Image (tube, rainbow, N blue to C red; front, side, top):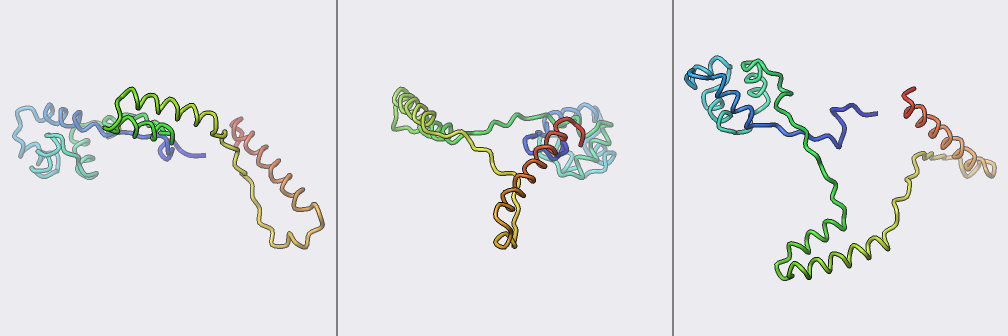
Amino acid sequence: MTSASSAPDRVERLDIAQLGALLRERRGKLSLRKAAEDAGVSFSTFTRIEAGAQPDLTSFTLLCAWLGVSPGEFFTPVTVREVTPIDEAIAHLASDPRLEPEAARKIADFLRSMYDGLAKAPTQRQVVACHLRAASVLRPGVPHRLNSLLVEMHEKLAARVAAGEL
């Protein structure tokens, strides 16, 4: 079970342009030096961030406090697309200057057809594994039965997790 903040497929981007625009708006007619002093950051830091530079964490939080805005307001979700090996190969073909676009398309169609015909569906990985130092001295069939019990336990736990019981 992972928290939303540690989910590997969740990616967010810091919207620097929005931060710069809000800084300019909040500063209004204040001088850059006075605004920087009020925000608790250096003049050069304020100037760079207002112009679109990436802030360090301390400056970012100080500026958010000065703006009266939650730091989360500046983060926008980014969709991450997983690139398959066949898509990567086809992208290389499309960028090859020695191939005409039509030739690259024909090769890509052929490769995709071959890949779809020959690639095997991913097999389910064995989830439960157990190393038994004494397996060689156990009665015949005991390691196999133990494995069956562990797999059954795993499946029941997974079902309980999916049902929200755990």
